[in-house]
Amino acid sequence: MSFFSFGQSAEIDVVLNDAETRKKAEHKTEDGKKDKYFLFYDGETVSGKVNVTLKNPGKRLEHQGIKIEFVGQIELYYDRGNHHEFVSLVKDLARPGEITQSQTFDFEFTHVEKPYESYTGQNVKLRYFLRATVIRRLNDISKELDIVVHTLSTYPELNSSIKMEVGIEDCLHIEFEYNKSKYHLKDVIVGKIYFLLVRIKIKHMEIDIIKRETTGTGPSVYHENDTIAKYEIMDGAPVRGESIPIRLFLAGYDLTPTMRDINKKFSVRYYLNLVLIDEEERRYFKQQEITLWRKGDVVRKSMSHQAAIASQRFEGSAASESALEQAAKEESG
Image (cartoon, helix red, strand yellow):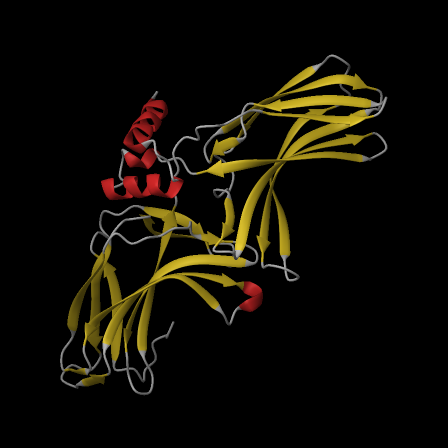
C-alpha cells in the first residue's frame, strides 16, 4: 500500500455500493487483534466507487491510467517477498490523461470466484482486497480495502461417530466415543468415556482441541500446533466400569473451518486430543482428527441467492437447494 504523503496531489478512497447494509465480520490481524471487515461469499458481486480527490483544486493531475484490482493472495511469513495470487482481476477506470477536478469512477466485479476462506495464522495469511491505483510516472497513488470471505458448507452426507481405545497392556483400557467426526463452528461435541480396566492411578484427564497449521512443501515444511481449548473431564481416580459424559461447546472458541492443501501452500487441521495424567506425572495421549465446517444458516437470513448457489458449487454437492432448505429447517427447529 502507498501511504499518503504531503507530496501527493490526490487521495483515493474505495467505497462499496452496499456498505450501508453489508454485514461485517470480525477477523484476526497479524498482531493478534480483531477488526471488522465487510463480509463476502464465493460468487457474490463486488461493486462500488473509486473517489479520486484532488488536494489542490484547479491544479491538474497527470496520470498514466486509473485502475482497480480485486486480489486474492497468500503470503507466507517466511517468504514475505513473494505473494501468491490465486485471484487477480483488473478493471481500467480511465485511460492515460489528466484530471482537473475530483472525480468518481464506478466499478463492478461480477460473480467473483472466492474459493478459499480468509485466514490469518502463525506462518501464513490469506487475504482478499480491492486496490485502486492512479498510475504515475514516478510514484503511483494507491489505496487498498480489505474484505473477509467465509466459505459455506452444507450438512455432510456422511458423518460417522468416532470410536477409539487407549490401552496399556494389563494396566489400562479406556474406550471413548464421540457422536460424529464433522462439526460446524457452533456445534457441540458430545461423547462418552468408558473405563474398562484401570490399574494405574489416574489423577487428571482432559480433552484438548489442537489446531495444526502446516505451511510449505518438501524440506521446508513448518508445523505450528496451537491448543485452542482445554476441557477437564475429571479430576481424581476413575474406577472400572465407570463412564463419563462429555459436552464441549465450540461456539466460544476461535475456530476456522478445516482447510486442506489450500492452493498447495498451507493446511489447517483440527484434532481432539485425549490426555491422561497419572500420579507419577506420566502423560498418555490419544489424538483424532475432526473436520470443522462453516454452517450455511446465513443463506436464509442475509446471503444472496447467487452466493447460495456458489456454496453448493464449493461443496461439489449434487443435493442442490433442498440441502440448504433442510439446513435452514434443522437450524430453526
